[in-house]
Length: 219
Image 1 (spheres, rainbow, N blue to C red):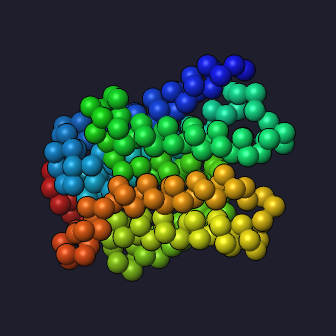
Image 2: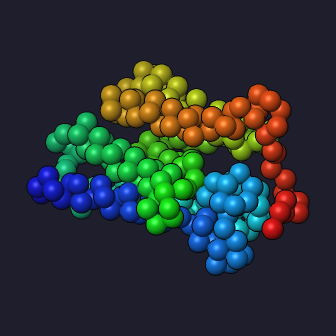
């Protein structure tokens, strides 16, 4: 496969990431522009806050599957994980990053999307499932304790590279944890923290909203 086709699949991953399920669900099912409500983000958390869990669940699943599916595009290339594992992992990561960029800056939704947490989760489950499951556990424990999705996401982001680099990279699976994956764990963590910088500021100021599973906050 020539280099042009590699870029074609990267572009395809970006376009897949640009399909904004939050915008579509809010507009078609509820008649609103989700980017004008709540936090203004086109993601599952804002859908949960504004429209409730029944609307948020399919959005989260779709955004998660975008990341998972984007990584699978590598199956259409000539790369072989046994021949060159670092290159193979690197291209998986590149496909995933393109999907996340599409989610955050969607060409189909005026380049105003979500924060990419669900999409990154899908990518990491595809590439590094065991550390991701541990990070998901951190997310769930933090969320059930505090009801802050933002804090839970940041805590999972902080601990994920610790699991990849130290727990699996040095102790449990050092031979199967590539340098490329270790580097990406830091990149993914940084991306999530950066996209949550406003939430972090609100957490510090005590003005961040908790998630309630009762009535919807606004229509």
